[in-house]
Image 1 (cartoon, rainbow, N blue to C red):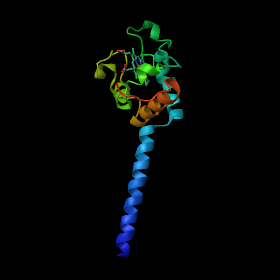
Image 2 (cartoon, protein in one colour):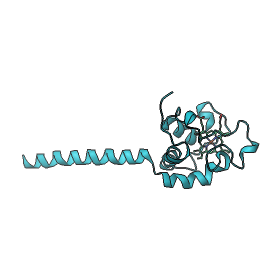
Image 3 (cartoon, rainbow, N blue to C red):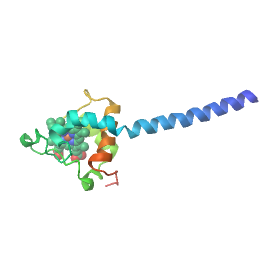
Image 4 (cartoon, helix red, strand yellow):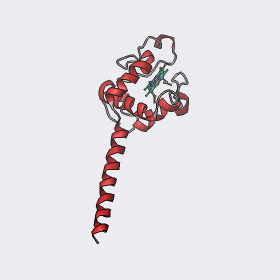
Length: 128
Ligand code: HEC
């Protein structure tokens, strides 16, 4: 009886702990995301996300204005994740948006998304 109680308690603790960890991982860390964004994304999208990075002049179509909350709130986190990991072509956008899956780990990408949401567009996904 006693052992079963302890076992049940352990399962509850592990389940709560596990979902908290999953939540933290999915949320990402905006400070770490900022580092990657500055290193990789800003050259095209601009440090403020306006699509005016130094490499943008040569691009057509231009990099998206990631600081536009109206537009970015139509993109779900999963959609942005796929765009960043697999590149623009994978989501029907321009292949000039490169795939970063070989450069950034999944958690790097979630960190960048957290940074985008918190500091660049200052917006959350609102649905289409
Ligand atoms: C070489 C230039 C370049 C770099 C570097 C770059 N992008 Fe892009 N990105 C683009 C271009 C060009 C588009 C526009 C594609 C289109 O509109 O068809 C784009 C589009 C996007 C979009 C919008 C997709 C949509 O659904 O409209 C997101 C989000 C995005 N980039 C995120 C990032 C992130 C995050 C990084 C850094 C990891 C990054 N980009 C690095 C060029 C770049």
